[in-house]
Length: 165
Image: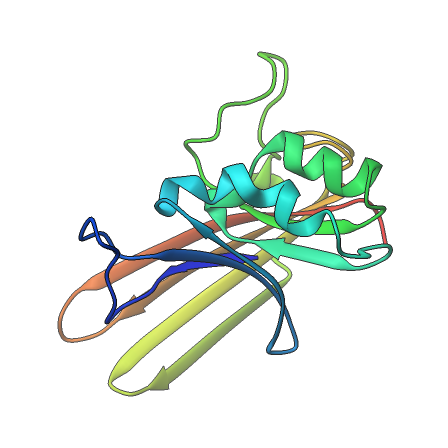
């Protein structure tokens, strides 16, 4: 599930069309036009409703990381999900906290050098049992940095997988 603004075309009011699509193996299964990027989350369930998602894994970027959408995927569509959780997402309650990733053993570390960049990625995975999102089973922390001759660029993402597969 992802959205893109169409370049090279304009609506009569001068704005560019923004499309949201559900894609599987390069094939567009469903697509809707929204008023703007901020309209993507509003069409999430309407776009996926007609699709048979039983047993499938739905991936979405951080814009679609909404607890109600995760619950809808599992409870209504019998699907699994992987979402990106950024630090700006508030905890569902004061008692809920992010997984204690500092105490989780590193699962993998890779270092690559290509195209003039030195890139390092670290991966940690732990069981979370509904900790931050409905039916969340695992959390994976991907922490990476790409260094090139222009800038240093840190990259952090907490990915949630739910329910247990």
